[in-house]
Length: 60
Image (cartoon, rainbow, N blue to C red; front, side, top):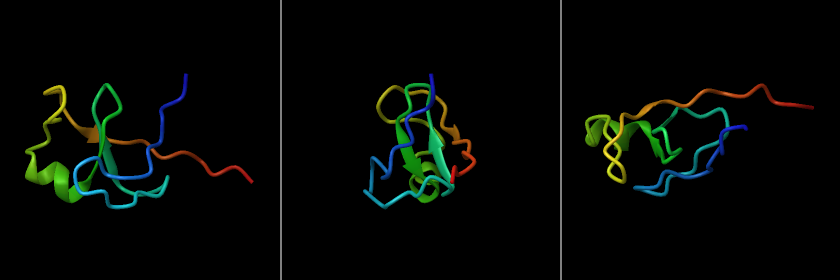
């Protein structure tokens, strides 16, 4: 099962391209780098650790 590559930060609604630097928790909540820093790397939804979202190789 592949990760859901959500296209926006759940806090500030900044657009996040698939290759953008983004952070996710184990539930795939997704945040931009600035919001992740402001939240001390903790997901406000589940309290889990936010880690760098992996990038996918673009198909084409």
